[in-house]
Amino acid sequence: MKMAFKRMMKHSELYILLIPGLAFLLLFKYAPMYGIIISFQDFNIFNGIRDSEWVGLDQFRRLVLSDDFSNVFINTLLISFYKISILFPIPIVIALLLNEVRFMAFKRTVQTVIYLPHFLSWVIITGLFVNILSPSGGFVNQVIQWFGGEPITFFMDNRFFRSLVVFTAGWKEIGWNAIIFIAAIAGIEQEQYEAAAIDGAGRIRQMYHISLPGIAATIVLMFILRIGNLLEAGTEQILTMYNSIVYETGDVIGTYVYRIGLGQMDYSFGTAAGLFNSVVGFLLIITGNYLSRIVLKRSIW
Image (tube, rainbow, N blue to C red):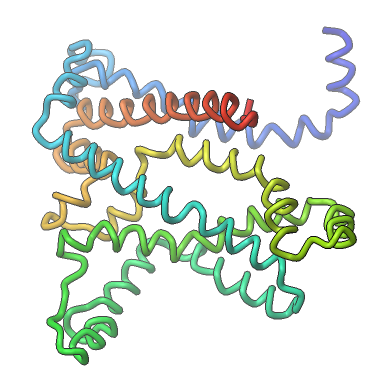
């Protein structure tokens, strides 16, 4: 204990720098967790948490047995599965290919262009794609009409809404995610590439046997974190894009919580759905980390 105190005093400046971050976590992450209590109550906003009636697990039973929940849960899993299976490998491929580019001006230009959409809000991106995909004058529908097709209302068609969600998410985030893997590749020792070149390995073999194994730990870390967000499915994105017509294919747990908890002021039910989402996400991270340690011999902890 005395030695630990001495180490803290020796690096006191660093510990002082931790204070704002810790204060942020305590104030905005841990303190609000007190509100989880209302998921076990029939919460009345006028009575407050202390005087609201306790109902135990009734809200969770109501959630699981509700008519909408099965559809919402399936939508959440499908959208997340599509995003992981389609969008997760693309940044890795982009990072590997950009690492092979020797013309630095071109490389930097591509990096800048592909990660700029990350800094746009979903409101702006939704407005952009609403104009591009508009059935009356949108570029995509004009092209469809040029080839003799009928205009498509992408944002109001259950056949296309999930694909639209996945595509726009990829357009916004693929470049930013690629930067993470590019940074990981930059940490690989160049001597490995030089030794491989002397042994006669071409760029493809170097990519496969040096670059890819060199970023394997980063890939595993990002994949486990992505699994933990399986039930999130892009709530902020979908809230700006969907409408009642596409609830059948677009309503996910996050948007369901928003609609019921805030829209209908059923706070206990909305909190129960949100807590269910968080607990399942936590269990998925634990499971993903365990399976990764068993199968790939790599894990976060």
